[in-house]
Amino acid sequence: MVKVAILNYGVGNLHSIRQGLERVGARVVITDEPEEIERADALVLPGVGTLRGAIERLSDKRGAIWKAAFEDKPLLGICLGLQLLFDRSEEGNSKGLGLMRGEVVRLPRGLKVPHMGWNYLRVKRSHPIVRDVPSGSYVYFMHSYYVHPEDRDAVVATTSYGPEFPSVVASGSIVGVQFHPERSGEPGMRTLRNFVEMVGSA
Image 1: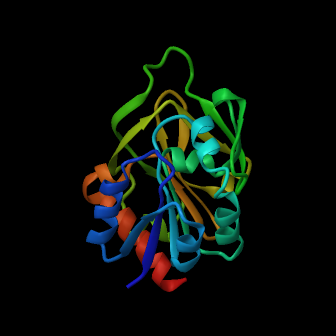
Image 2: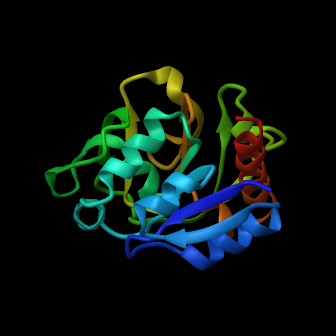
């Protein structure tokens, strides 16, 4: 059984994500200890809230996160956790973790924000994280910003809300989803199951 560490930095539906991962066969620990991250087979960055506040709370854990990424340990960013993976954000002109090249930008003015509720995925390319998740599947969103990767090949799936934005990205051992899989019914559970299977085959 793979061991997944959910990083506790004061944001996110930690227990709902834990329950989802446990349902698909993972052994889960919620932690803020670098030693636990190192012992785990994979790392999850959850999150709701502001990027600047999250980055401040992650300041003493950057080394452990970077070490995990450098060692190709599978890493899943969820919602704000996805946005944290990138270089910078318009939200508070903040710097992210820089594990993926690109920026986080605000949804255009004139749209109701946050983008909250069910919307569909348009799968752009095959990847283990979207195995058996059909294009057109509806998942649950809650966000006001979205990622803009420099490498367009990193985009696995998109969603339209005003602009068409990346809703699933992947690069090497790092994957991220803008939606909340723990709230997204069967497509969300399939996404979590896919991640656990990726960990098992890593």
